Length: 188
Image (cartoon, rainbow, N blue to C red; front, side):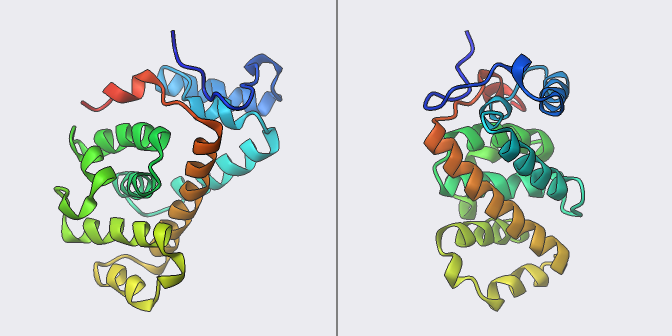
């Protein structure tokens, strides 16, 4: 039996949700082959579900970062926050997009020693610094990314992803959001 999406707040009955949210959940379920628990958990508050996934979609659908880089940033951020749900769920996506069955664990625990290029190590380090010491991020941190060829727009997207997943990680902690069993084996 699949684990409940979260344990500290009620998980809504999908059939009772507003139509647009039901449609999004059905679409995600069809695409993944299962319903990622984050959708049922965030559906607890429909207005917040819409805002969160609109922001997420706005980054994912309009960024020139590669999907591997997007997932690296999410996993590095989530690892820094010890967020089990996001490390497991986005770790699966990183394994798929990075075509590497070991990469997610390396990025989540210590991207400086991961099998990454210097460019991607610096990308992850930026996300971790923004997570752990946001007030200390300065021009030199942005310049490091620019020196690797990232555009201002891409650096904005890295900061947006990091910020969004700091929110997501904190909500996953407070809700005790549980990763789907399916995520553990994807991309292996």
